[in-house]
Length: 155
Image (cartoon, rainbow, N blue to C red; front, side, top):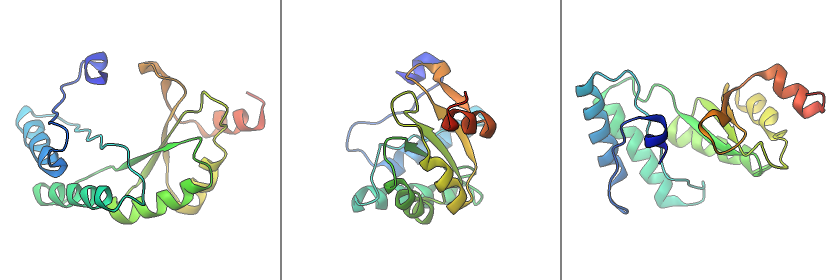
């Protein structure tokens, strides 16, 4: 759906197919097409799902074999309603996948996203985007000053 909305090519496989194999195919196709950007969106996963974390680790390993510098940027999407558990999630995902940036979603609901400050401070990670809805334009570049005003209720 999002590929259609953003007019971006999408490479998908059948449910249950090898995710690392799909990442390999996507990398090769992006390389052939001369693409500057390849986004690999993995299925939502929790840090306590061992098989999904192993799958994520394998994806990173496969990409590293195709390009020793890959993946270049690994963004973890954090649900604003997760709360304190997000601190543990980010730590584990950093160890498994080398997360080096954050996206926080669901800031359009009751969650104010205060945990984002704690995560960014503890893990020294930049925040790239925030999600404030379900439309294409609802994924906004992160602005620390705007976020601080919103948390303080001065937006």
